[in-house]
Length: 106
Image (tube, rainbow, N blue to C red; front, side, top):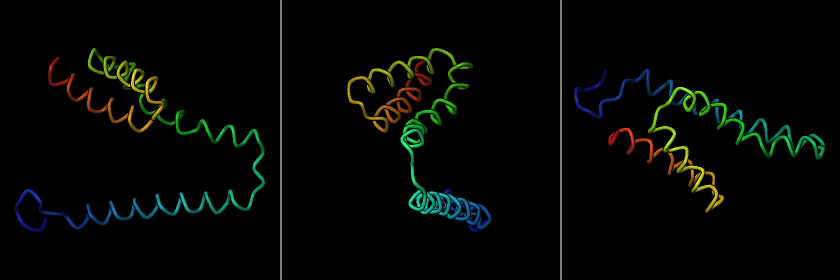
């Protein structure tokens, strides 16, 4: 590890993070490249449009199933913000902030 301070960076960790960023970027670019060369049917377009929500549910579903009052309260806040703003990023950010706050209070 380089240095002893709180901001010291381990070269291995930095390398792993950079490699993950590169793979993520290549995956995104490769998917866009592939979709430009394929004829996208209405059915595929509909499936791709709901994919982000399905991924969020797949990640958060188990957390909610095993969670307690803080997680369920934050889920309620997410639903309320989503209903009022129709903004997925804003609702997810409000949920993260709310679960942190509720875990500190409860």
